[in-house]
Length: 92
Image (cartoon, rainbow, N blue to C red; front, side, top):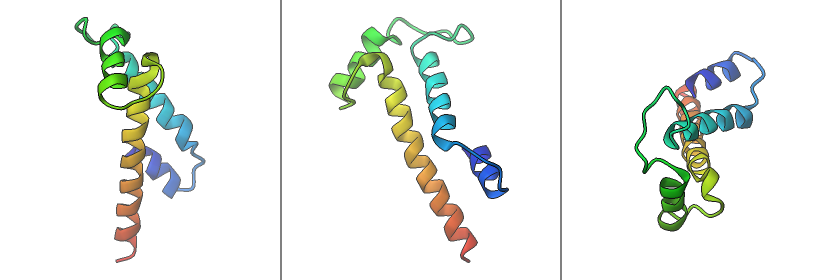
């Protein structure tokens, strides 16, 4: 996130949605046990984690991409907060 903002502030073109989507997709692969670099329990699967997010966390839609949608929501809020922080800091 900081890297994205730095690139924006230095005038480099940044497709924030594409970058954030890529991050969320990568995290989903880790959480669903689909990244061999990380070990995962059977709970970390579409069948368990994805369904739990849809049913219990209010994430509507297909459990297959529920983690990605949660990550996008979380990262979107973080980006907004960070941009506001930088704007406030610049105004001092």
